[in-house]
Figure: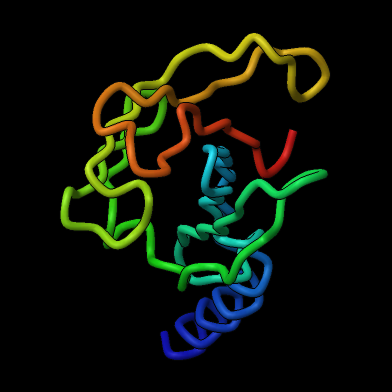
Length: 139
């Protein structure tokens, strides 16, 4: 009996090395003030993070400013995939107080399939992007 348990444990340990957690897709959007990226960095981070990179218009283009500190997405927003994103009004990123609804994106992705984007429907001021575009981790 002990030999069978030991064998099962060895198989579990060998197979566990071949299993990995799925990496998250990325959402990106730009406003007149910020470039927003929501990503786990291709599994680089333990959780999805919100990156907000401010910029300003200057003669001849845009000038990047000091990025805001990255914030864990779950601390700032709630996400229902394919439905909506709701961000707390007291948050620290430009997404604070926004609500986005999932809509079909007319730009093709992944070999021609129509993509998904989240359209800002509430709280769309203060640097929040009008759209967050879905970029799949793998096509």
